[in-house]
Amino acid sequence: MSIVRQLAPGQAAGLHRRLALLVLVIVVAGGPWAQRPLLDFYTRHFYIERSESDLLRWVTQAAFSPGWDVSADRYAGTGALIANDLSVLVLLAALVLLISWLSARGGPGWGGCLTVGVLTALLANLAGLGLLVALVDDAPLAPADTLAVNLGRGSLIFGLALGVLLALLFARPPRGPAPRRTGSRPGRPHHAEGRPSVTTAPLNMPVGREPGDVTRYLCAAAYVDERFADRVVEDVLADEAGAVAPSPASTWRRWHGTAWRRRTSGTRATCA
Image (cartoon, rainbow, N blue to C red; front, side):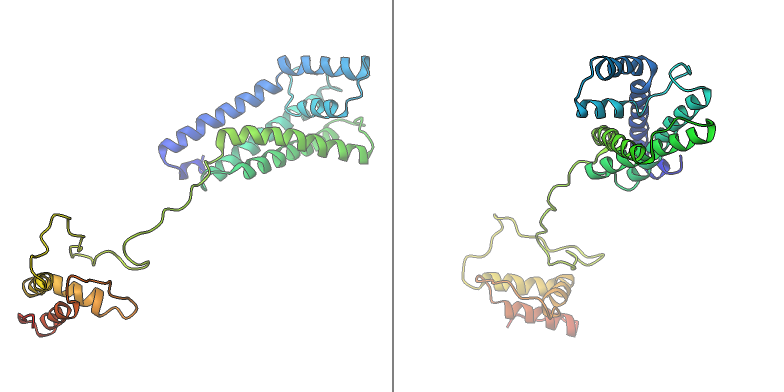
């Protein structure tokens, strides 16, 4: 499948397994071994015992949505059986295509899974109704308003249940807060390409014993290391928008000036 090929091999294999599990669950739930006991339950409660629970009736009717069979005993002829089974195939195909497409784009969230569930359930029911009208002459249908209400309600209930199943199998985990960036200012690299970066000195590095030693060390660095002098000029002196961090242990103007003279003159400068 070209949509799944956009994923990494490991991700595609995991998606295939979950899609196979999804199809298996729907096929098992809609098979005769599950639908016939459900039909007996519906007949007993609502035609024999005359149960008045509308919610139970609606949920039971929605559970018939994925039903399929190989015998026309429960249907009004072979045409009705074919229309029903083809609507289940439409449901499975739509689910596989939509979930594969969403997974190739980062994976659906809970909202996306619920939406896919409701839309595919409605599509399958509409396909089944259209096929029934096309394949069965004088198909017994309820009045248009009653048919629309039952179709929409059944699609919503079954679609939400299907959406929960999709979310459990395919929903991406919630994203945590973005990590805070520390260190350099946004938009500026830590170091220029091809040049070593200046890192923070270890705590045990000597910083001098007398006042002014740090300044002399930095001047010496600009004096002997041309790359360090270039970094000082480019990242500090030439940065019009940046500010120099406080450096109480050194006189920054002196060693910055040394770096500047080293850079512009190309000769060794002294720290005056």
